[in-house]
Length: 199
Image 1 (cartoon, helix red, strand yellow):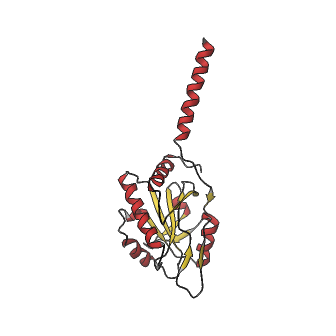
Image 2 (cartoon, one colour; image 1 turned 45 degrees about the vertical axis):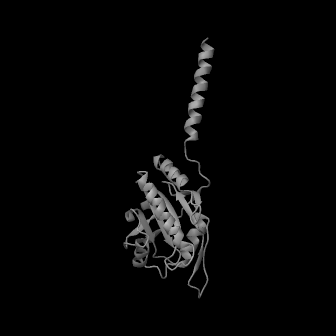
Image 3 (tube, helix red, strand yellow; image 1 turned 135 degrees about the vertical axis):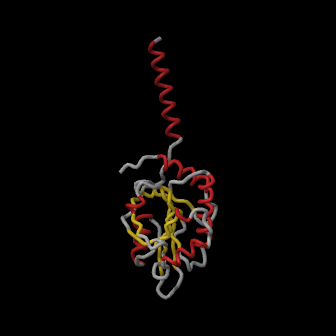
């Protein structure tokens, strides 16, 4: 009889542990973000250390973009609206310009304003670095590409939204141009916000 009670208790415990683990966040990858310190739209310095302890979602855009950046920015603004509607507050949106020579802090601020975000204070529109720096950061930290052809005003770049955890590690990517999985992103961000940083 005691053995049966013991086995039943073990089974119940295993089911509970299994249920808990099913509800947790599952990373698709683990890319450690390299340290950086750049300038935002308010002329403030923003570093990787400043973002540690906060869940953030990143994208690569530029203000003179004639193709993918407009839907990406609009989609990110829509995502922020959904986060707002869900009561999610402890996060950041980080937009790295891939055209730092032309994208001044003022240009980045004007670009952000055009999309009328529900909470502009959550956005870091970053610039103030060299073309080589952003190309290296994109491939080294996010495993995406940024490529500027000399003499051409457009920049080729990846279109993913990259989710970064509290430890500064990119853990998941989503299409930022079309068929954006808003519900999945909101759910994933909520799960990561609940997790304690490991470092």
